[in-house]
Length: 414
Image (cartoon, rainbow, N blue to C red; front, side):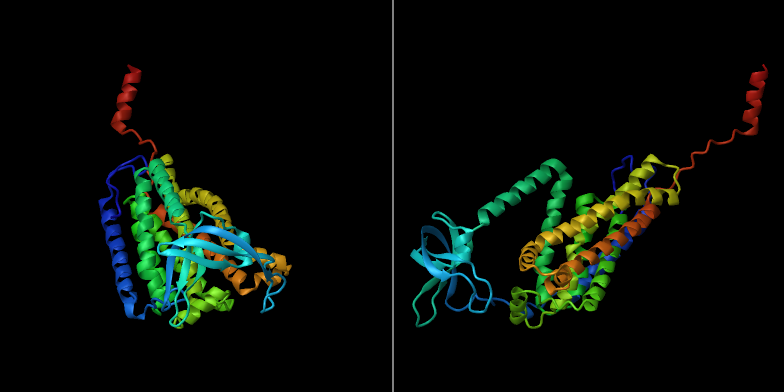
């Protein structure tokens, strides 16, 4: 598992079968431990909440519909709502739509109508038929299956066309990741298993599979795997400590409150720490693979370079990568929290007050913990890569033997 069958300019020299065998045993042992931990943490289906929520009640069903009419009307929307919260000003709308068994009508509030809806739009609606009451309908969402599927297909095709077999195996890796998240990680959270343990075990299993799928079976990939696994462990430990230190409860929005009410056994504070591990996996994988590749390429270019020199050269690349990756984390989290940031800005709250709120504080801690794990993973991966890379080749010219020097002297004298 730890040695590639293809020999390029990067893995020069004879095959290192002894090292490859040892690394294979180590990786298989890690995989076995991950599988055993998954078996222990595997969620009991009886403990996973199902069919809970407002869309699964008795007499409630979801229908696909097509909007045929939009009639605005004055619903006195504006100013403050009954709970004192700001309310969108403007008209509401009476919507007519066709469904499989006829026609449905429902009203849209001012916020949704202002966002935009028109005849021809395909939507999802709720049909609510409580016992002893008249049937009525409510708007649920727009249908997005076709455009989302098309975008995913375009993405997959482009990745495979540009990256070829590497791209294809990367797509397979995405499938493995989604499978692990939906069949193990999320159900285990809901069934009451320790979220951080589940996240670390699930991330370890995902990385073992994905790294070798996307980057090939080689000693170089194994060095990146070791750095990634250490980074996962560090991020998990830092996430747990930071969550407790900053008193993050995980309840920062109305959705969080609904989730706790739906799944009372769920440890949301633990989920916050677990998400710090999962959220940083992509960038962590990126830097560890890059560092391992940098070491191998420099070894090919500088066969005589000693380990310390190789480490120093690779770290110069690593520092640049750290800077760009930290920006990536910050922008990613800022983008995901953009609605909250806009709302807080509109309220004109101070920066210190905003930063210490539950919702923004969670994103800040997640960013900082992910960045710390990322920064530490770079030198750690570089150490693994320098240790496992092909050894330096002594290029000092050999001294001629005495007899060889004598022959040369005789020739010159003659």
